[in-house]
Amino acid sequence: MTLSDTDRRRLIAPLLDNGWAMVAERDAIQKTFTFRNFVDAFGFMTQAAIWAEKLNHHPEWSNVYKTVDVILITHYVNGLSELDAKLAAKMDTLAKG
Image 1 (cartoon, rainbow, N blue to C red):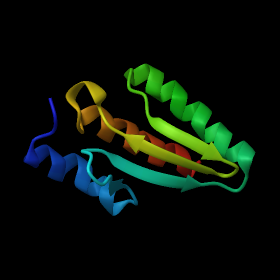
Image 2 (image 1 turned 120 degrees about the vertical axis):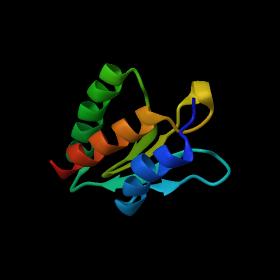
Image 3 (image 1 turned 30 degrees about the horizontal axis):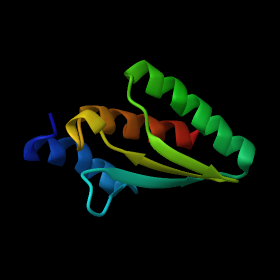
Image 4 (image 1 turned 180 degrees about the vertical axis):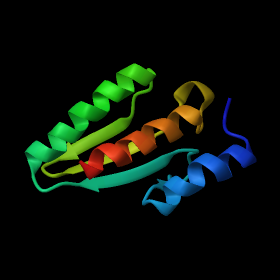
């Protein structure tokens, strides 16, 4: 089930204040993370992958050198769910090191 308006305000609004953005024409959020170098970017992806497996919720993402572009959406509901908010918050924490 996609998020209610109340849950969007509670879960997604703080993420938007922290650099996440809505994806045009999709009920999804995206963020670009920039690191010092490729090793740091890849390390972030490795840590995030472990959390994604724990949550059984996997991002759409790509990596070029020191940047990681992430899109989060819950495919089986074709929109945002609580899982997206959890993984986004975890990624923000991991990116801080």
